[in-house]
Picture 1: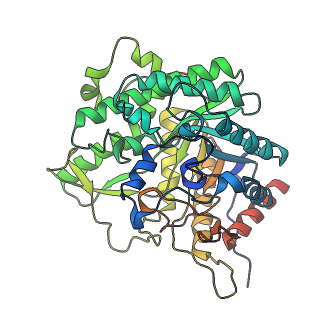
Picture 2 (picture 1 turned 180 degrees about the horizontal axis):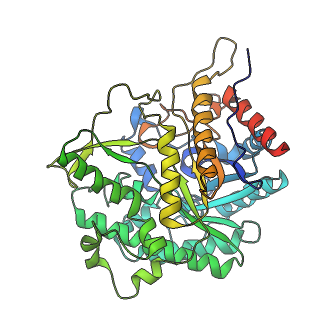
Length: 445
């Protein structure tokens, strides 16, 4: 069989970074070991709110198998690995005394990465808030800004001698809008949402300041999920609903962080929570824009919903991934252009990937030709954006491993590596070999 075609990459920078991404709760497991505290996601799983009653208790067992996983990255030839620290693993109560065994795990992981020639990109928060802090109001409590700053100081002082790339948050728009983040799953109050948005933005600014102070020369950013929000029909109501979701999803965090103000559509609603000096505390200098992109979303008006919208039907004929997400490389290229023009920062694509239901064939191989075609098309679109002047400097695939996909549990698979969740065996898919060939080819030029 002919080897799958590689995408054009000639317009990408010579120092372009190729990587993979994961997050702590989705792969680590060991949720009850070595002094780790509970996170909000442990509680959601315990309450049966995840598909098939799946939990993160074992996940990919990365906590015990990290050396095997770093070896996979080395085989891929990636230059960087973006991961997150589990806040409750290092601060079981979210504040107060640190948990040395939890910190020691990340020491081992970082040292293993560096020994393998892979740069660690550390994300402070990827959705696993300590439950002890949720019990105090979580992100709706303005004290969360101080909690996050305390946590950022612990991480920066412990790992800043070896880590230079830091992200404050992963996808704040997603966990504020959809990710059980409005306090005890209360999604009924717009005021709660606006309070959460503002406090997370303040925490970002506080985290940047701590990182600057503790890690001279650190390269710092925030990771935003940016997807086009398109109306499901030609109606004015659907267009207005799409514009409203677009503001919350795509601009409510990067606008204040990078431009010093909230979007006009939601600014008046957030204003009651803004205290003197807050906007300056939020808009701190950062070095790059982290972009996660998967597909456009289609929106229709829904008068009875909290924000006046719901997800609408996708137009007939739109190509979809097996899990039902639209495939549109041109939307990715256009998103890169918009982010470049609106924020003026170097862009690192820190998540892009293809969700499916992979399984081994009779020979034990996992052939995922559709994922390869998806990645080829999206990387080609990124190359086209770079050719047009977009300052894109890196691309990280979601994900190294199949893993716990939040409310979908283990039903969806995004990995370049198949994980048998019973045996925990790792089986590199055909896309793994394709990506390794791509990196090798690009780095030769």
